[in-house]
Length: 444
Ligand code: IFM
Image 1 (cartoon, rainbow, N blue to C red):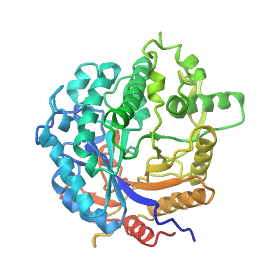
Image 2: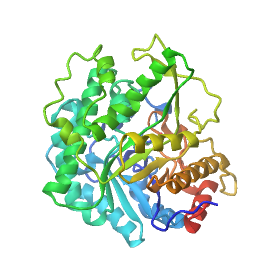
Image 3: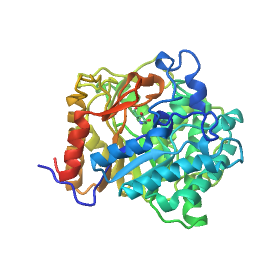
């Protein structure tokens, strides 16, 4: 039996574009995802977040689900285009929604954990060059400052950015996320401006506004393993580790970009002069905690055809519905590596969960035993890590609701609550019921 301490935070998480809908309401203007999802072929089935889970209108019903889970905290993100629908124009009506949401959560004794950027950059900002343009740092700071001023009294913890790797590399290099570009130089600039805006937002929060809630950043990390002991596969695994993990971890925790990756990237990036003096000091501004989204390990092999010399290897691990390796042991190894090489900050697992093909039974039940097992295996890993003194303070199950899974549209269900997207009816899956039990007893 594994026990969680009474101050361990159990939570669940979502993000604005994936659940809110109400795309044109209360002054909101389009984001890059509204644009991207409407380009034919970009998202499965032509799905968009126009309606999504209609959470904007149903948030009170959704808070009832959160209450039924008994969790301590709920993590959600703010849609920037609701707050600044046009450059320099604050929209109080857009902010009102988040004030109501956070106030209702507080009333229910649920701590709001708020992310400022979960990928929905306003179209107006993108039209001016988006994150490739260094001015984006200033636009983000103006937005962040408003959120801090208006919401800090209602919020328990802040995250500046969610998974900057996805925003930068999936969005600007691999082309599979908005805005769908395929240019490594742009992606490198974008990652730099995202990180810079993170560091500067932390400074603004602490030094200028003198606010004192915990603030940090969330990275998506996967420990990387070579498919064999060959020198080629070792090289490929190192490159992928640099591409996914170290390109973000090193500037945040060591104040420098990894030199092996700068060398590798320099074949495609003419100049790194977008990195200005003082930037890395800003990026490595100390935070109060470190957020990690963990889903799977990565098995990597050499490929002479790929520009960065890696490709996914084939593994015989059990897979989730995304084809991702179920790998709770490697999750423990990841945490050990982070503790050894990077940080002793308190860690929050800000996302963990799995998509599987769910079946809604006639009686409204969903027997998602694989998702339940996945969750239990990762919670058990956390309990073990905490017995070792790894200081993991909280766990946020992804996701409260089935939702818009980016390029996969509504084809992939990550929710512990089943959403019938025709009727918008919600059904608690078996995993949600099991999570409620674990949260209630604080043991596995
Ligand atoms: O749905 C996403 C989320 O937006 C960011 N982290 C990974 C999840 C599952 O792919």
